[in-house]
Image 1 (cartoon, one colour):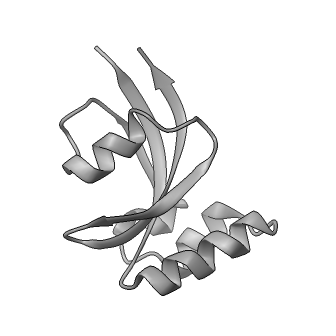
Image 2 (cartoon, rainbow, N blue to C red):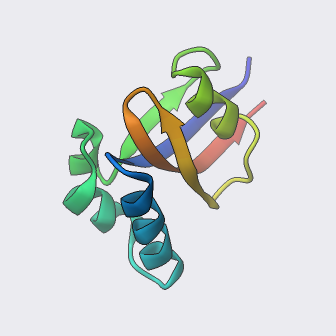
Length: 93
């Protein structure tokens, strides 16, 4: 079964999500941005979510994690929780 590891940043608005994505694209550290801005408790660990299988996360999140290129920041991804930046750090088929 497929497994993936990912980290994310959760914020309330699409605008903030895009702003943080630009900061990361310009060289800001994903983990530091997560610690400073993420509304998810995982932000304290740099947004690390650990390893999980398909179906363990909400559908919109799952779709990105199991299809996006590894080590490339994706988003904004809208879920019922808000807007996410997602980076798949590892995926095993």
